[in-house]
Image: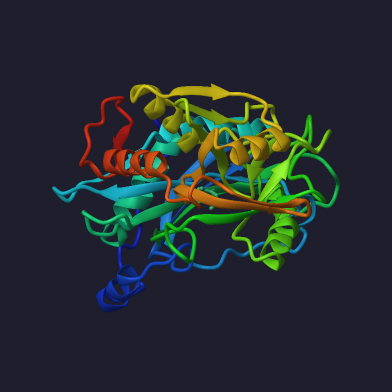
Length: 363
Ligand code: COI
């Protein structure tokens, strides 16, 4: 049972139907925001209280709010999909609720129950239902729940006041070039997260620490950056905001094991299941970059791809580093990758049977 409720006090919309239609015709990723946002507050004295859906608007915070100074912040990413009958669904939201709870524990933030998390998604997406793109395409409504330390206090301790919000944003392809083979820069200079650190938590700091690597990637003409483990700088970890996988000639699907420095992606987990379903042999293991490049060169690795909620599944065509460049297979046409992508998006959009019970109705 949800303990919080999220009433919509004023249903008037801020944006006209015509403006909304123009955004939905070409949503991009993360650029446009809907009419409403959902909010609840936690205090050390009262726990979680209230809950409301209010007009999307700037948030007023003290310049001393702890989040600005000590980055006590976590977030999630999900998508809402419209099915052919007009209903709206999301994908495995309990996994996101559990990960938000794990992230909260790691960042010393209060946990939000799975029921309250699901209630907040339902409230937000119901209020913004007209913003869910039409059925039949790949566009969706991206849902971004986040939680941060809003207490005005400069001492270093976990905050006594925390705010939780859900905002939504219509989403097309994550990468500006669409679903095209990515060029990925392998960073020898920077790591994203270290042993015992916050790598497995979905906190803003992990993404902040990836940005310089991403900038370096862009300087080398690459779309994304691949980070290696922080201790030995030899094993592959993940990209700036996505997990990474390889498919081999002999039918294995390989991804770095969860070391505590890697995000436990919901898409990652779903792909491992879909791979198993189609007779591929999934393995979560340490993968050195040298081993990866040798097996790309020998043709043993035939495909590689990036995967995450926002990016879905996107083929990687080439790795570049200070040491050289490696073209994967035929440069990223990725037959198996694209079959997995089609199956996953088909389940999400309601056109392929949801045999694992992954869908959750929102509106
Ligand atoms: C997601 O895939 O939902 C993320 O949070 C990653 C970010 C690159 C958008």
